[in-house]
Image 1: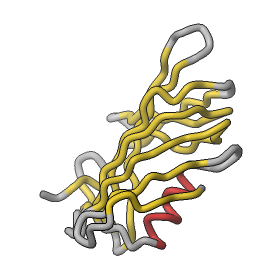
Image 2: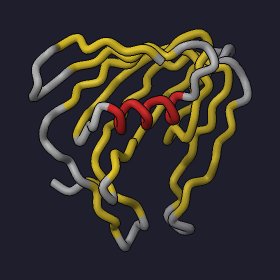
Image 3: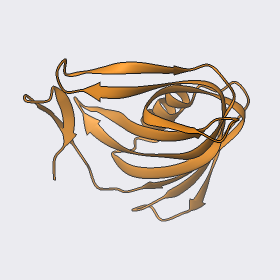
Image 4: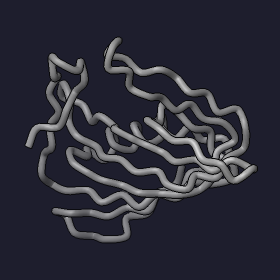
Length: 144
């Protein structure tokens, strides 16, 4: 993954992230958040995956059911945010993927293998967004 800071404001930097063939999106995005010490951000993007794993939250089990996607897809939209949970940046990412037949599939993005590219615009803030564990859902939800 390569990136460029496209807004040099110290308080609210904006980055363009360009993922290359074979990059693992969640792994690279997490590394970027840690290295840049991002405490609050939102992002959007588009591109394509050679494979991906999405997930759907099951209220009964309080866990995510995996949805493997073992085909080339267009990333019609990837959107998410970064907040602090247990002292570390935590990603929350959803994706909508377009299949070759024109159908779509979406959900919580667990991981995606980029092919040939993924482009993300990330809008960071000097503020701190935090997550805290919600007992009812078992999820780390945003505090406001």
